[in-house]
Image (tube, rainbow, N blue to C red):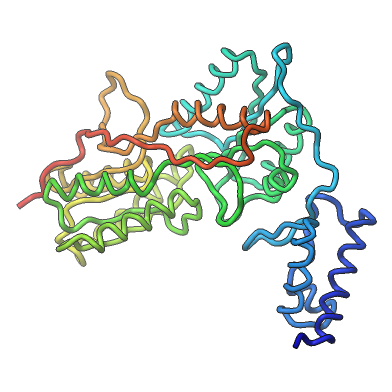
Length: 374
């Protein structure tokens, strides 16, 4: 039999929060107090608080996001303008600062597609991986745009303003990131398949001791997926040995910082190769860390790919430049742009509630991989 005292307690919490929502003390998109704060405020257990919040979820008054908190659902949904033949719509794109190795073709293709389809196109770039800058861009753009394509800034969590868009059922497509257990539209590369193809290529060449090289404390879901799938593949493959070499985040526009971080990496590489001399290949989760690793190995008098093979994700497009052409996973930027436009168009016109898509990537063979040394 249910404890009536507990029912009264969680009922009291639920009623008080519902009253605040009804009276507009808490508005659509506002964050509720945390479970711990509610426990302290009402002097109850976490289970009691969760029962109260579950009632509010069932009443469609709030939505809960694991690791982020509970937010009030909008009672007055923003008007979504359906496109008519004579109407020109506006879409916005919000991206972090783009590197030549990945993202510039997405932006360029979106610009071309919107122009061809007589769609107004707004663009904003977030600075310094700032949630505040991302929030300001979203707040500003949603006033004028019918929908948004957002490449969230790096971080362990998704920004509050993006969660508000999802709560408000505002048309939004996320690129290169997804939110666990949240029904949001997103496009990400099929990192499991792409990572497996890259590592299978190294294994077919004969490499059996492969070092994974991710950025230290990487919080992007895409980077985390690459590391997870690489570890899983290598650990399950017979006779393979896996090592890990962490790199640090680098501001590549700051030459002194670049030189300092390269020396730090060199020290790590020396220690790693002393500890694991059997290593013959490196799988790097991003392009620019791969270029620094390449420089470090050359400065240590190794030859690539004679002594070590290097494979990475992404690369700038080169034509006749005298540069190192890395063997790399090439994400399909053009397809990502085309699909994100189609997905957003469907959301604006209410043809779909939410869409999730994994894009295939290509393995491009360059000059940095070969059969392992004897």
